Amino acid sequence: MHPCDDFSIELADEIAQVAFGVQLGQACNGQGVIFLQGTLGMGKTTLTRGILQAYGHQGAVKSPTYTLVEPYQLVDKLVYHFDLYRLADPEELEYMGIRDYFDDDALCVIEWPDKGAGVLPEPDITLTLDKAGEGRNALLQAQTVKGAEILQQLRTITG
Ligand SMILES: Nc1ncnc2c1ncn2[C@@H]1O[C@H](COP(=O)(O)OP(=O)(O)O)[C@@H](O)[C@H]1O
Ligand SMILES: [Mg+2]
Image (spheres, protein in one colour):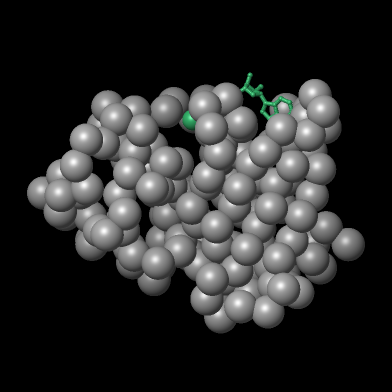
């Protein structure tokens, strides 16, 4: 897509990471598919905690490493948090009925999406986390029209 459909931000620490997750959650408004890319320890789960806080989730966010997905039913929003780190074969996703999760009325946040290549749907946004000094850089790239709309919302929210 057009390069202006990218959004990049530096996140100095865990607090900034969660705060940005909240803003991203607000921008998504409970819809979309987000691929969270970046190596172990880059802050994918931390960012997800912020996304969930945007819809009122106050508790911890466990990594669904063995169960692959954790559903969160939050007031009027449904969020599925996937962690595919342990996924050996993308076909396992077929057995767990993956398609049922990708509903227009749910937000799907997916750690280690590469492990589900070929079975996962196309994301609206790919979000890539890299080290930036002691903190992190988040690069968001819209992959669909809906993704571009979410990034437009995000620009408004982050000012
Ligand atoms: N922006 C940031 N700057 C510095 N440390 C961060 C940042 N975001 C998260 N962390 C820290 O990185 C570590 C790993 O975070 P986590 O979310 O579990 O990573 P991942 O899910 O990508 O493996 C945690 O200790 C967390 O506090
Ligand atoms: Mg994680």
